[in-house]
Length: 123
Image (cartoon, rainbow, N blue to C red; front, side):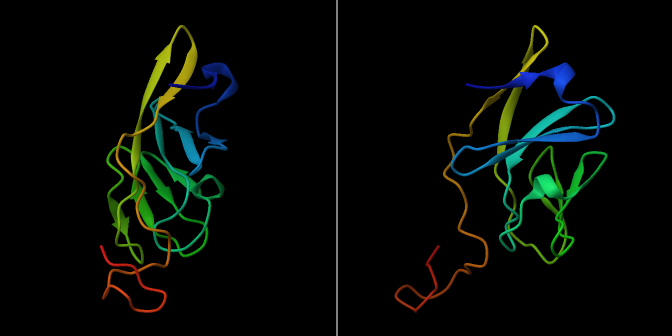
């Protein structure tokens, strides 16, 4: 479990970026919910912490891909791969993130393809 910050230090509508590997973005939505996802867009290498938060969705600042913060699901192209989500615990006024046991997805820009092809990873 990773200590993030006191909930009072993360106002509604704001994001906190953890310098983990890979980085994790913790979002406090306008309705008071707190979500954590991998911070890098699955379409191209952009920090989602720099994007636009609207309700339970995050819009990537680079190509406007939209992601559901609850599920990690893509809600708007050009991204096709979902984000990895992480469990958030708010206890005694402090925000914690429990990193997902799932491995991170492929690096942005890497497409599924034939094993052994230059610059392409098999999935």
